[in-house]
Length: 380
Image (cartoon, rainbow, N blue to C red; front, side, top):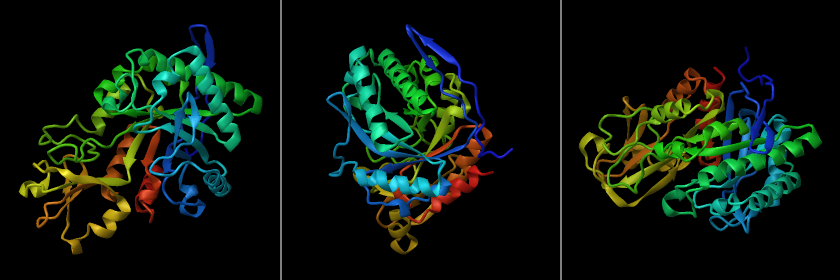
């Protein structure tokens, strides 16, 4: 069977309290989803649309209870960007374009989800936004219900139940819009790999409402920690003494929570993270390092600047199935995804019949090296 073919599913009816909505259909299509940052410089010619099934333009935010285009890193979503995405859809008419709302530090969710009136207000604004920009979907990046991103955004204990009601209202409004246009509008959300994240969502009620759950299987380690580690280890190396496991563990937790494998989409990073002053033992891996002066680096920068000529050597952790770079002279340690790691990740997606993979973030691989690897692996 052609794995790129969408298999139609019968819609089920869900009754939650006094609200009746249609369950989102389970698709057998293996997705290749790209988040696309509005604050980066790009146009349709930079998007290899034929290799993608979905694009999530990032990020709109919640302002005064409604969806809004606000400045992030000095730049907001522009009408011209939607025009470029329309051009991408001309290349691939099956491409679905979504607006991603929230992201790290994106506040306003707890208040928007608080009451029936606030939920209605936000959902109505989403419908208007979708119609204005001719979109196919909305992606909810609430980071995170109840937990609040370690204090980065407002949160409440009742976010758990309110998140369900929030998604019910969105599903209901999208279904009403879709009925008028004979179209199914997608509803998705991004989820954390942290073990506590599962406890903060009513999966039995939320998952039937959504078309996909995007599992953010990256940022396991970074320079906020005083010890190096892998950005996105597929498996846990026993030497990783401060980790929460690997991606395989996170996926198993979500599957055990009752999420259908076909709705769980694997996140892959088109960037890396680095530390300064990592100890030389094990070529810097799982070693003490400075948590000052480290940060994030795009894949295109890694291939251009963190090279053998610049004193970096590439190493492979076979236990974690993860690549890393180390400069013995400077002590700079870089954790990142490369094509070899990507192949193991996508093999895992296939073996576990997951719904596909998503990318954060498309611009970070300007030559398309990682995207091509992902695309080829998804076709197998």
